[in-house]
Length: 197
Image 1 (cartoon, rainbow, N blue to C red):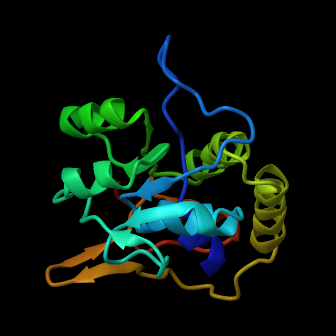
Image 2 (cartoon, one colour):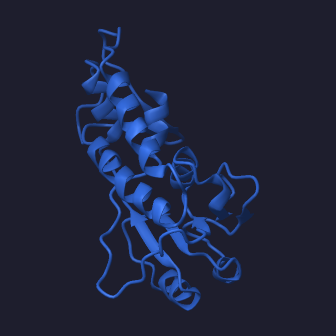
């Protein structure tokens, strides 16, 4: 379950391509800049670790160049990497990043996810992008992850008491209803101590 919880920070609903937007040519060499540790981890889980050329300081891709964070990214460093694909996790537009991507001929894909279904729904589009970028086995790896998730949540939890899932202690903040953590826990028969959204 922890693996899929990490996966929930890794992939989800990608935006649909805009008419006229470049798509990767089949077999082209992917050069990925990821501005999300979760998306970086997902790319690696789908077999694309070698394609990650730019990352945040918190991403687990040691061979990639640190280009900043989603909020404080170095646009010049991103452009210098000549990416083919830029991944970000956000619910807001980023015109400056879109401009850099256009000048580099790269695609920008944005994922936003709160629920398990957002995560599950985002794996296939991301795997297809990676496969189109020349990363073999990405789609099979996505199917395998989804199968492993189904097997993991089929095992009921042993706790009969509600559980508090903290994601911050200063100030204290917890996952409530309407979150992927709540979805996972309830799918396994658990009770969340926080019932509010």
